[in-house]
Image 1: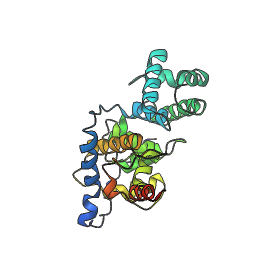
Image 2: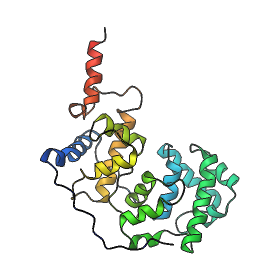
Image 3: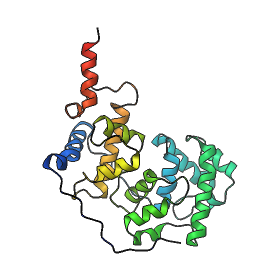
Image 4: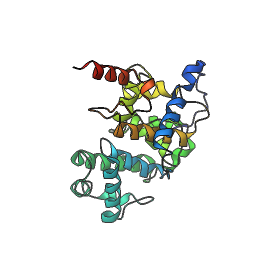
Length: 252
């Protein structure tokens, strides 16, 4: 069944200090200055975004996009018509999405989630979620196995729902932990802590741009191995980068 609307207001957050209030905007400005404005994001419907996010987990963006194109080409599946994916065999789905990581795991999970949505909603759509509060949408999505906070955040933020959320994947987590913005924690806790620092003026589109910039930075300079700290636009804010640079100067 769909979630139940609730009118209860969220508790007010304590006021931030001026330094806290400008932390994320300052990082955002520096990344914009270095990388430029990200390309405009064209939102998909919530179900299409969910499928894309499931495919994109631990997968390069280009591979996930290619898998989506292959689903459309080979199954004639796509926005407003994901029934062919739901009804395809697990083996066929795995073969079509072979370019992504762990297709043998993602194929049965995709099929099962689409079957469960159909059973609970009565049809294969998530458009009804637009009527509900963001936290209720995310709780409803996360009841399905394989959908955690990262994917539910991507669905509410990047789809036509356009809600305020941050999809904290491993790349985003690595950057903010190296910057020591919040104490080390898992993705769900980190998102909660970061959202407390997000300015009220940031809408869903700015949050999506911010995540894109963090992702780009994680792939370009703040990589998992051998981060390139010297040219980093965030070096003056980054204790980890400053330690790395100091260690380089101390190395004989």
